[in-house]
Length: 194
View 1 (cartoon, rainbow, N blue to C red):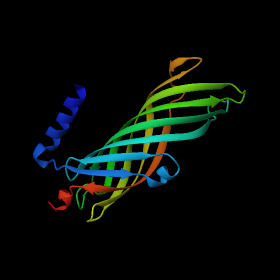
View 2 (cartoon, helix red, strand yellow):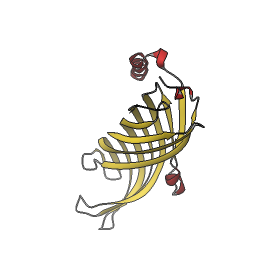
View 3 (cartoon, rainbow, N blue to C red):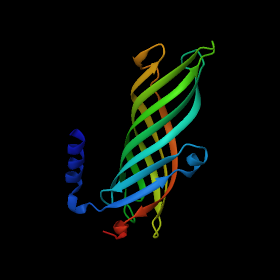
View 4 (cartoon, one colour):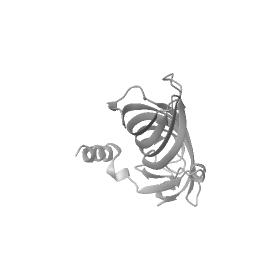
């Protein structure tokens, strides 16, 4: 019920009469090439504001030196990221320089190995928030290219392994990301100037 009132509030805030249904579908081809498939859907509420839902699979390895145990971690995860974008002086509507606020959920399964040889399988749920900056180019034919960067920090992490089920502050993460995505814009009615 809270989600419905949130979206209704957004439509009232930006004005339903100014809402033009323009949708973009994008993907990051570099990440897809290395096996981390992701897609994003960007729904434009007006020329200046859009909501984006990003979904992606992520697999990788990392080494945690902060605990002093030199823990090697391998994980497979999926992530959903919701962001609200504001475009400064758009040319075709929903393009050029933008800033965004981000909230995301990530669920990971993996294995960590310490230097002592102890192997632990784990599952981890995390909620992060952050902000981003970027630039989007849109062609007259509807092709879209977006370059964005941002910062995310964990708000909450629940980590479960064979030893414990804990809400942890030890594994709070911070990350800087860079995304290059290519896609197509449907219903380009916003390309008309104001």
